[in-house]
Image (cartoon, rainbow, N blue to C red):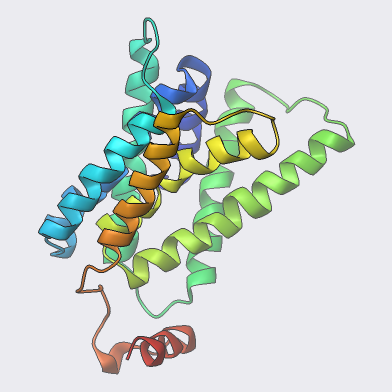
Length: 235
């Protein structure tokens, strides 16, 4: 419910209430939330190198999305902030409670459980879903398979191999990707502050990626073949 059920609903509520720049800026606080929760729950203490990367990354996101907006609905800010905290806590607990169950299985069951819960709530509150055409169906498939299933497999894989704060910093590529897609697909243009912001985000990831102390189990507990391959590569 933290990773998928509550998170998806709150994200879409925030998207309807907030300008995209404000929503992206709030979600850009994910590195701070993840690192703050990982310290007491996973014993992953933030390093000075990570702090420098986080500061650069947050500054970069502010330049990329811009903050020049009018009145901001409080309900949208609350929805976005709660979504951020729910997702961060869910990610940390998924890492804390991991076992030898394969990553694809844990991700699939979480998606299934969260989806079934949302279906039950949606049917109760909104009734049957609207009819969609072929284009809408293709969009649903793309969102479900690529933007959700594949994305969360990558997300949880990163949490198995990297400190939570570092994974959060990599997530700062979200607004960067959105801006670059706007340029490539929508014919938009980049302002100089946005270019500087993208550079700062990339630098922040490069700085934090050198942080040591990956959250790996002891050698004897690494029974997952994918984990063993990763260990050999890391060694």
